[in-house]
Image (cartoon, rainbow, N blue to C red; front, top):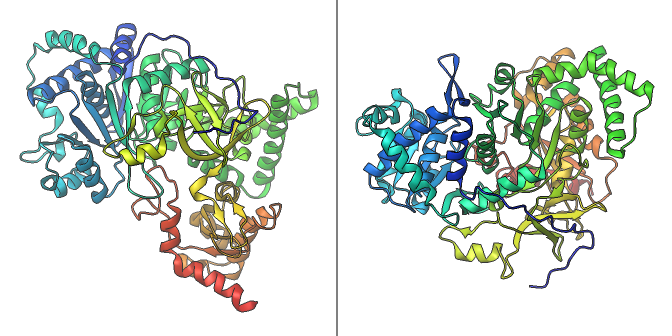
Length: 615
């Protein structure tokens, strides 16, 4: 294939030699270095409980012994349907040690998608976390021919014939210590090229595909992360695990934390994250933009005197960031103003995030430069990166001493990035997947004959080699006039409003773009109540003229600077949330654009019909 090379593509930074080429080496060598340190932390019965590295190793030995008792062999698949918890990591490491292949499943997936993944992967064993997750397996286990054993993590959820993991471990022979020595030797014999995991992409379109990643794929990416310096860690730090471990970014971060002596504290749930941040007080974490958008919206949504103070502080912080980006020293007056802003506003925001954050990586979706600028101005080290499940995942990232707002940073060591003829980002390197499980046709479409991974993302390099992402090729909207519109940046601008929870741009093959918006109903109802509209019914509230005017100002009003062909001309306010359970979001909260358009087809048709009638 002929590659159109961008003249701004930076030279490849060589990946320095590294000595841990499998996840098994990473696991066991960390135990030797950090044995008595706290490795895993979880909250049970209202209090946080811990496992040291040595205690975690003993449990891995026990689970591996069970796998052998069940006659699992290298290459067999073990599925985990669970929220984040220590058992997730224990089963993962035990399976990897024996050369088994781990198949993570998002706990938010409906039963039919769980069935597809189990059947497609040919999993022999499946673990569920709770009775709710076990219920899915009970429905489908007789329909998945390969599935031989079903287990559950919670003791209270165990049923006849479906034991809890703890109950099985209690009967494992105490001579497990000698088995542990044998296990380490066997684990070190697992080849770097062996498959470690099959991760099914959540996918905004089509059927999920199983991404095949080897030990070497992930280990090389972890080595590149350390060399690149995007995630700074040291022994004794605490990392809050809040993205699902079925998400490749969180799982890769967990391996990195383990290899760094960082305690992994598992958030109880998405709803509990604010409380867990205050309890755990993490030093580092990875997250998706949704978390930071919500914090930003909450802070910037302040009203009255507090609102004016926050807006002033944001301006001061932004000016400080501008000086940092330019490498210039802020004038004395600005530095003094920033100290006041810090004392009155920013310190409270940092406290709400635990008060100890030293490094945060944001990935999985575009981060608004406005939000990034705000956090950096508040003294919160938030840096954006970029990657795919197919690349283990990180390909590029910003870092503390080298960053650019509006970009995803510089390429990782060992990674080649190029811009293809249609603006598509192409990637090549040691962390690129082996292909899609049971899907050679999709593999050939994703990786060409020269080894380039076609990411599906549109991007460009700036003059310093920093990569900026524009949108997804398949999500570009082409209007009836032939104009191409990238929806994600426009949607991101509207979500900066504290009154907007979700937004979706539509308009493919239409005369102009239009916007579907789901309000932040709690804030909207409070705003309406203050103006004499005490309405709790969503459908009725969004029909009120003052509410419509507010949301038009908060969305269409923010987009007045766009080119005429990009600017949405109409707004539809939705009363129902877009959810994973409803099938309109992926488990990582990406919009399934085509399904949203189909679900709200009548609403969309009415928008365009109204304009046509007026013309």
